[in-house]
Length: 276
Image (cartoon, rainbow, N blue to C red; front, side):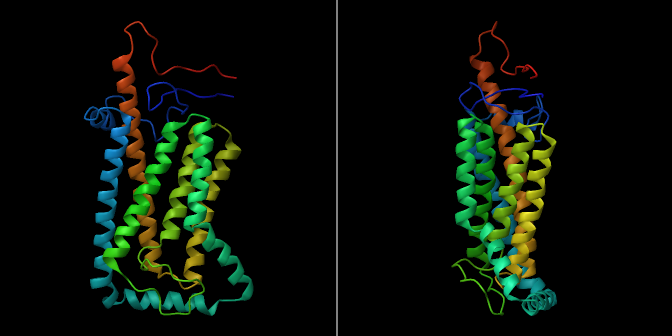
């Protein structure tokens, strides 16, 4: 099958990634122009990740404050309460057990554990840019989530809750956002590292099914309002988009540095691989 299309590393040596994915910068595109402002890909990654956090935290805090101050008193609050009450009415022992598992899939312990294992596997394969993409998405999501919970401080639903409430407030759902960022990031990474249709479909199925399962579990267990879930989806999508930009800028900075230090008669950093 067709293997890797080009290789670049944060240190200018080699990494495996597939050309033509959403993580690849366009030649002389916006990412390449931004990358010229930084001295190396690590600084580019750190600066753009921080900027992504500032943007997403600001947007999420603004929406959360608007929700609490303006939308909830105008009727959205009644809709939220009706959704929470409906889920409480559906509770059974079997669903209690299933949703406990679903809630666990978005917990900090599970998300961080999976991210660490994936990071180690990617490091063994020297896929540094993929690690940077995964880390950027999770850092932006977690940082924005924590900022919003402090600024918005929305109470959790006034129903019987099946989990111990964490110290963070209700808006947004950190479990849902973290699950969506993690599993969608894995799907994007797998898409770029293999042309196996089965693996690609499997990971994209997980990226859709697992976050939905986590979101429904959090609603069922009385831990979040429906609008908290909507806010978490917005947070996750925004974090993923920011992580894509971060990776494009980092990749462009890597290529720019490699070209700067490359002898005039040296082969290009971007090398076609032999199909196997």
